[in-house]
Length: 315
Ligand code: ADE
Ligand code: ZN
Image (cartoon, rainbow, N blue to C red; front, side):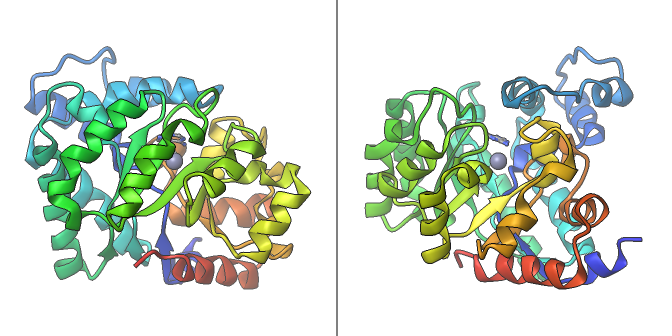
C-alpha cells in the first residue's frame, strides 16, 4: 500500500532519538537495567499514548527515557531507528538527542554520545544511511543549564552538526537562549529550533532574529502571520513539519485540517518528518501516507516534499 511512498528517496530532518523508543525495546531495556515500570505490559503502555497537548506527551516521553542507561542501550535505540530508515528509503537523517534528559539522572554525557555515535557510524558503513547529529537543549530548563550542557559537548565538537531547542514551548521563548546559541554558533555549530508548534508566530520571529536558525522545527503556526510567511518564502527557510505528531498533540484536531500542503503550494520549503515515531503512530512513510489519505496529496506533491527534505539537509 505504501510502496510508491516508501520508494521515494528522502531525508528525515526532525526526529528525536528518545522518541523512537518503541514499547517493546522500552520493556527489554527496563528488564536489562532492572527498572520498575508502572505499566503491566507493552499493550498497557501503548494504551497510555493518548495526549491532549505537548506537555502530556513530554511527561510520558521523559519517563520512558529513564530505561536508557548504558552505551549499549543508546546504541540499540539508534540502530533500531536506522533500520527503519533503511526500510523506508530514508537515505539521510539528522536526528536530535536531548543530553539533559540523561545527564540530569546521572548518566554521563559520553555514555549517551558514544552509544549514539557508534550506531550512526555503523549505519553509514553497513546500511548506507547518512547522518548528522543535533544536540538539543531543553527549553523548560534554564539557559545556565544549557550553557553547562554546551560545555560538556564542546570536547566532542566534531560529533555534532547543530544545536536545537525543544521541550515545553509555551512560556519558554527562544529569547531565553540567545547567549548559549551565540556561543554554539561561534563554535561553528548551525542553529535550529522548535518554534510555532504550540507557541505563537512571535516565537518563530525570535528564533530567526535572535537565535539565527537555519531551519524551523514545526513552524506550522507561521501561517497566522502574513509577513512571516512572506519572509519564510522569500528566504526559502525550511520547515520540518511532523503531521502525525501535530494531530496526536492536537495542534490540529484532524489530519484533514493540516496546513502542510497549503504551505507547499504557497512556496514554503516544507518537509515531512516523524518527530517521535514510537509515540505518534509511524515513521516517515506513515506520515506521507497520512497526507495522501486525508489531504489527497498527489504523487507530484510527494516528490516535491521529498526533494525539499534532500535540499534542506545541513550536511
Ligand atoms: N521533544 C520531543 N518531541 C517534541 C516536540 N514535538 N516538541 C517539543 N519537544 C519535543
Ligand atoms: Zn520535535
